[in-house]
Amino acid sequence: MENKKCLYCQKPITIGRVDKKFCSSSCRYAYNNTLSMERYSNKVSHKKIIDHNYNILKSLSPKGKGTVRRSTVEEMGYNFKFFTSFYRTNKQKTYFFCYDLGYAPILDNGKEKLLIVTWQKYMERYDFNPWKGVQ
Image 1 (cartoon, rainbow, N blue to C red):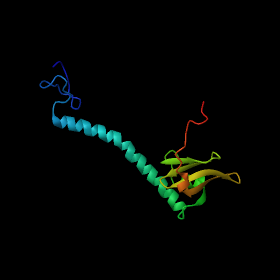
Image 2: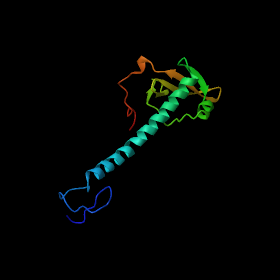
Image 3: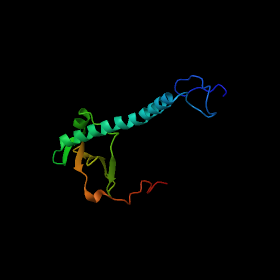
Image 4: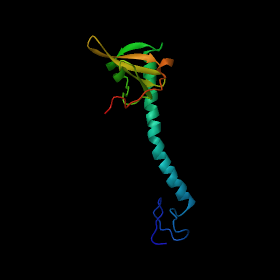
């Protein structure tokens, strides 16, 4: 073997197969565990943000429908970049959902507000095409 080094500890690999990447099983396990942690840490942090968003929507509309000022939601720490799905109406109004609770941005007397709604069965449209109208 010509100067091959372990991918985890960087020690030289002196014995074994020509295509060997690790000096031991423990290095192989540690390397793969590190990769897995990196891959799934984003998933965990995103889920926490979405859960936080959901709890904010739930606290502001215990009956599943309501209107609230956008500034109130922002002060509570809502992160508008994270949601689980969206629904676009025929009139091109978009609702952003965190699980079964969502909102649509609206203007009410010039003030930015959010219309909070609960997911409805009719929103399960499978004919949605995000590229429709794009040239």
